[in-house]
Image 1 (cartoon, rainbow over the protein chains, first blue to last red):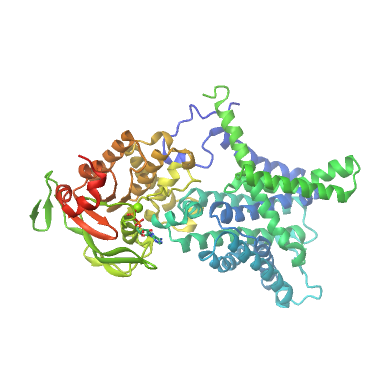
Image 2 (image 1 turned 90 degrees about the vertical axis):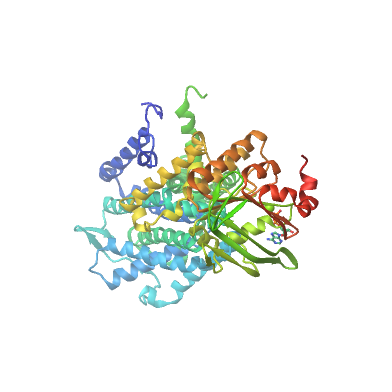
Length: 358
Length: 273
Ligand SMILES: Nc1ncnc2c1ncn2[C@@H]1O[C@H](COP(=O)(O)OP(=O)(O)O)[C@@H](O)[C@H]1O
Ligand SMILES: [Mg+2]
């Protein structure tokens, strides 16, 4: 099949601003969706879902969230881990306080609660920018982890200090707890990631997205065309935290099942998600997926090649991974801030004009 | 110039309306520096009002006062017959005042189309949820705004660069895109800070034509800072002359041209006939 723009004329502005303006891209999108929903669930195994699919899908949601804040609205955050923890603990409290309410509703509510918390922690962004804002969000990160460790109410006074997800059903199938089938946890994450990506895409291609990007590119000019900087920044924090909260809730309830906050939602998480959007591409929804996929598969791939195939010691492979990630971060920050998504776009641009580049 | 009650008829026979913006005894200080010293002048409906003066005279500062960037220490801004409370820039924008900057202030990471679409933000009323599902009002507004923006794009003849990221454009086109963004807001009052600075003759002619057409076709009132005296004399209905923060002349291009204080301070050096 040819990848072509020619002969694919837009006759309306709606058609022109759609998500995939080129027909081939649209087909591919539907194919990916169909395979994800209708094929993979039949083949998925416990190993695949735990090692690859669940972390990929859940991190993709977190990366979409952070990318809205950092990539689109230009507000740096190192608090992603802390906000994921808010989502996780909100979900836990809701699950245990209202056991009869559907878990899916709890996950969405946990996102809403995180949005409120994120907005509150976003208030300093009205005064400070860049490095100073990063430090402020770092403070939020440490504060939130400390809070969930310190205040026993958050973990229902359990002796271990951990939170663990009780079993909850959706349509008679367990989606949390040890009896959850692989396909069920996969589908729950897939539904959330699909809806999150759609919402994020709509918001970023519309008026709100333009407010965010305008604020990112030149806040003074944004204000002069009528953007209220308070509203632009706080909505970015709210929407971003909403997605990050949902990913935290899923990470806890569906993926891990039990969480010790400092271990799971520490500063490492914040950096991991930040690295995902840098490698995947700042300011791109596709980039969030690409970055999440890359950083989730890299350790699995390295283990497969290094440890299983060549018999290298595990710690060597772990260090190799750090070196690779570090190198890539530097490469993308210096050479290609729009990340894998941009490399992909450039490849497509070439393909689109091939074989007559002029 | 004949004074015809509330409105003017200019030398070229153009009728100019009531006072739209009235600046009264504006004083602006930066620390010890008095950038604007008790200046008063008005801008009338439908006119092209030039502000001229040497570098550092305080012209840009004046536009910044009008658009709410700077709050003057003294003086009053009257808009449409009402005294204006100190406003934030985005509130000024919502009153129908748009502007361009002396140093281009575009959104470099966005396409030309998206840059111009930001000019329509004041016309977007749909909420976050409607935009999130991209249905109903949100979708309708997006299409309406796009239609308006396409008209501006046609008007300024920049169809070919619609989807180009602004960062890749040459200087002259950037100036044009910035004008497009301001026009997309359908302003009542348009403030242009040196729209032709750094342009070649041909680009200046294009830009002059656009400014005249905007004024003609949409009836937009324009305040224009410009150094090229030929352009100022051609375009403007009335001229304010500033020097060292003071107003030293105010009137039709001919009056200003023959004003001795103006000749001494400015025209004598910059303008050879
Ligand atoms: N933000 C500012 N802080 C301090 N001084 C300023 C600022 N903006 C302008 N000025 C000073 O005010 C005076 C007028 O500047 P400006 O309005 O830019 O002049 P013009 O546009 O006529 O060239 C200059 O002396 C300039 O240095
Ligand atoms: Mg100036």
